[in-house]
Image 1 (cartoon, one colour):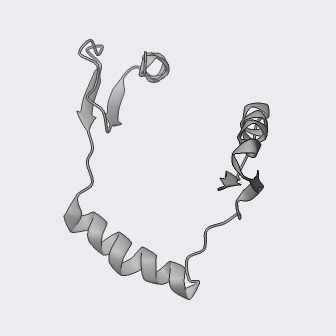
Image 2 (cartoon, one colour):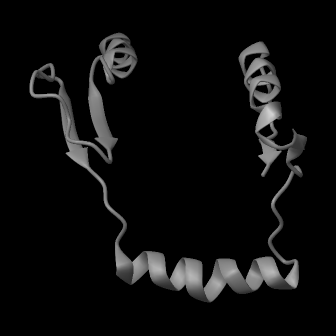
Length: 97
């Protein structure tokens, strides 16, 4: 069920490669190959530790657009879920605790 939408897209495309962090389903069509992706420390560590973190601190890299704070406290969870269900674009909804 997790891959149903992906496999429907691959069917329309005539096949492809499915990459995920979970094992691929055992019943992949013949024209679809599957594989798992894990973080590679030789790449991930330099990128995140040596570039992203300092770039965020210096302002060279920015998290944009800023998140939308729905409210503070668990009582705002339902409101945030309603907004999410209604559809949000290019923003992250946040409930501060």
